Image 1 (cartoon, rainbow, N blue to C red):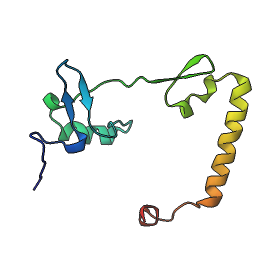
Image 2 (cartoon, rainbow, N blue to C red; image 1 turned 180 degrees about the vertical axis):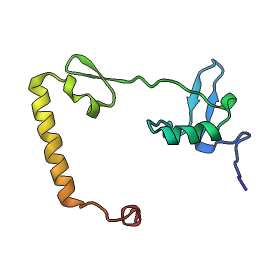
Image 3 (spheres, rainbow, N blue to C red; image 1 turned 30 degrees about the vertical axis):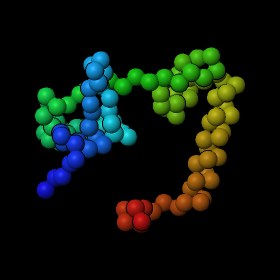
Length: 112
């Protein structure tokens, strides 16, 4: 049984079109994946006439330069004077996180 207050299914994962034709995604996340198996499952489960596909292209303006989002994947585009401290910070943050939170032994341990 699926119960939804809205006149159409989707809840917080729906999209609505305003009076100007702009599509607003109501959910907190947009579904994206680079995993073939998952993508095939989504394709199987969805109806093409109720699915909006688009290529995500976002940018971060930093140091007078546009850098593709997510920044973590594109720090190599920073000027060298910013890149080295950024990489050092990422290494230190990773070390600190691993010391404070050792790897979980199971999904149950991670989720609880």
